[in-house]
Image (tube, rainbow, N blue to C red):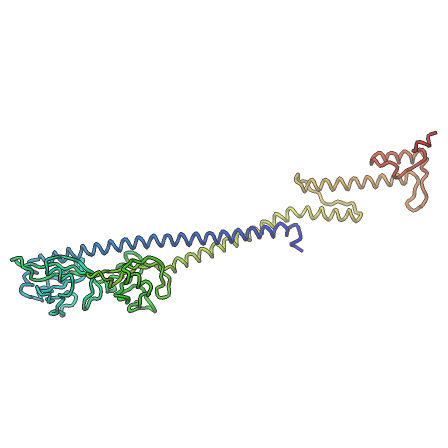
Length: 411
């Protein structure tokens, strides 16, 4: 019933339009917000990637400077020449903390380890297979990403050590470890990303936790492994890490043989972005719902104000149709409703005048409403009243017809 009323015909289409508008705006805003959030996340990742590459270049410079500085120290040269392990440890352990390198490995001219600052009790074995040591024994200072016997992934710079005669008597290898928690934690703190180091396809250090523990020894996604390890290409895009969507970057680390033996990865979880998007969508829907309710209330107020006089006029017309000429509605506005009200009043006034004239004519001609006797139309009084009535409404020969009114009767 309400749908067919004046209010319903206004309110229901308006509600439909507002609802569609709210839905369209919410969907559009959500899509734009997701697009913007993804663009911001991508921009932040690109910044982190560039900073990571710069950081690796700086590490290369730092290890080279550390190795060359230590290799030129007279005290170190003397300790290597005399194979004094304790003296080398005493000199270099404090230096490692200040040089930018994590550790030093010192060898003799054959590549036999004289001292390791990160494992003081482990020496006497050969590291002549490491490329940085091989190149240093040939007089070159070079930096490589390498894997060793106890250090799984590292950057190492080997510098030759010369005695007073210019003979190479040993090597100083300055390294930075990538396979330790401190390295990935530092990357996370600097760049605000999750950081992971892979040796092959296995995570050896990571900031990503699973069940409250670092997710080490877990496997790399096979598709990404094929791109990064087999094809030796960088990968930047979305990936699932332990079931959670991330925006990720994987950088292959190439050794001296140009083999991708390790990977450094930085990643940003998309869960925060999705959570923010969901919150935005919820807020948009909530605001839209509040706006819809406010619009409905406003429409109800407006339509009630408009329809109240129309309803009154409708009741007045029903009363007129039933023979009751009492018009109770009085509208003073100058709009269509006010003009309609004035027209109704004129109609009612006209009907009243017609009824009054009919009554006057009836009683003036001597006709009783309870008699079935025709009036004496030839009387002057009846003739006057009849002509007055007929002239007013321009209806000739309708009520009072007499032979006196015809052309033939005048003779």
